[in-house]
Image (cartoon, rainbow, N blue to C red; front, side):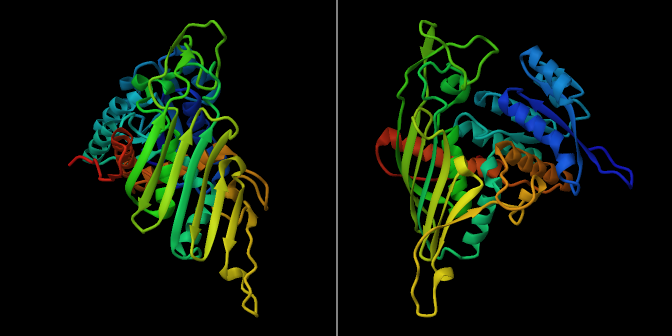
Amino acid sequence: MTDASPNTLPTIGIAVIGFGWMGQAHSRSYARIPSLFPDRPAEPRLVVCCDNVEARGAEAVRSFGFERSTTDPADAINDPAVDAVIVCAPNMLHEELCVMAAEAGKHVFCEKPVGGTPDQTARVEAAARSAGVITGVGYNYRWAPLVQYAKSLIDAGALGEITNYRGRFFSMYGSDPMGLLSWRFEHDGAGYGVSSDILSHSIDLGMMLNGPIETIVGMEHTSIPERPLPKPGEGTHYDRGEPGDPTGPVTNEDYAGCLVRFANGSVGTFEASRAIVGPQSQMAFDIHGTKGALSWNLETMNEMRIFLTEQHETDDGVIHDGYTTVYAGDRYPFHGAFVPGDANAIGYEDLKVIECLQFLTAVASGEQHEPGFTEALAYVSVQDALVKSWESGAWESVASIGLD
């Protein structure tokens, strides 16, 4: 971190590794922080972008404001101007990159779920903890203003004792059999499939809102076993091939689902599918307590349905049942930085800006960010039990897989 004069903010140098869609989203988000948050604790400096495709690195310099680019991760990580490394490469590369950054004394933000497999995440968490660096993980749906509001209602006891939780992430990004065989569909590139990808978002949010999970039973399924091969360095999981193109095997799961028991005594279900037809990006939860309920869905992220019995009691003791729809606005956390008033919507990438601001704040203050690699380890400990369950067909206990 570069020292500041009395009238300026300190500067935190950023390296982004992996300049696909997510790397670009992080880069745009850091660039937007100064114009959105005048009370920011530091200035982000886009020092270096690293990607194995030279043209992407050149675009990072030309259009995103990076000072330079490289194809060598070690070059980016060891740049003396870099304070924090943002890892957006394919999942199975995360361990090598995160460990390299931590051992170089750089703070590390990694896209979820940090490792392609639970064991990888455990090793990364141990390395970062040993190095004493600040860590972050990309569970950005935590930062939706209405999700933050939901957390405050639950913590205040407005829902009473929690009894039931339903979490799901249904996405159509893999529903087209002509969708390209990107690294996300290959165990060598992504590790596990939806359980490492979108289910991790759903369960992380469930544990943020409702606490730890103790036991789990689940299953997995792959419904599209072959996909067209992409051209090297081109295409994402949102792009498609054509009939007759050469294909390759899908080597991880399209679907994962489970029943769980939470430590607070409540019960729940979680599901994720990338090959379902209908829901396009349904990252959603329903949480029910003895005094009320909440329901939120990313597809309508600026709305939340709330049922609070105590607020509907009348003088004669009658409770008028029914959900109320609440619209996001500047009275809820972070929303007003993007747009004033009520029911004026913010979008997905605005959540990434909030996420980047929170990590920048942690680095500037020297205080650990949440969610960090500790929370990533909590999720993969659940994932580890889930994988054991779909292999055994039985209930499995969730135990931390962290390393000493």
